[in-house]
Image 1 (cartoon, helix red, strand yellow):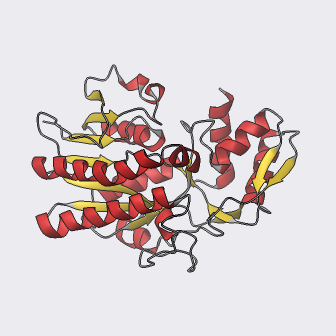
Image 2 (cartoon, one colour; image 1 turned 180 degrees about the vertical axis):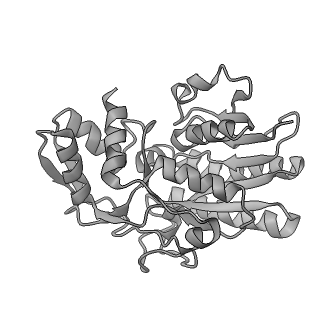
Length: 309
């Protein structure tokens, strides 16, 4: 019999790609989402697959599922600044109560568990690039604190379940990811810039655009996630593309690829916005034999095609 994967947040950007990957690998997939930021359109093409099941449920509430589950992938959470600023309480609840419930069902079913954590746990980092050993520089009561601390708590309770109950856990720290199925109103730099460029609207750059980010194409990320899910690594692992770009460089690349007439305009830098962000992926390369293969311009071309549809 095929194995079963429970993917929370499965109708979201990353979750829906994970649903596709685990179905491709021969799993039965249970996709759980309350659709607060996910969309049924992301998984509509999977509904005819007999090995796919969607459950509309808020993981912050008790999870009860019949039958065997072999792995739980906990990806439920608002993930962009726009979302977690609009839903601060829900973000904290899904990181705390939701992670507790997802760990609970994994413990009940004797399943493996993979937590989707984030580079945001490093905050506005004082160490660059960021290795997994770095504890971070986070303002816990700042506007981004609801997301940062939710994920930091999620990591802590995941490790507690591993050490206390012997649960077979994994933690991935995901750095900026982009690709098809991103929402146009996502609020992050790439969907913002592409949407504005395609409409010849002003491209809004915050601060001077000198802050840096590292952008990983979604297919590279999903490969890393799958490899980690099949590994026996219990400590956190960074998955992301270590090639670093300024936000201004990103805006200019998107202007070039879209042949847009948009002009760049500047707005004040949001509070606690990280000045740098770059993953140290030494651990992923060594232990998972993983590294990204898609260059930024190649990935952006694919993403732009998606936004043009």
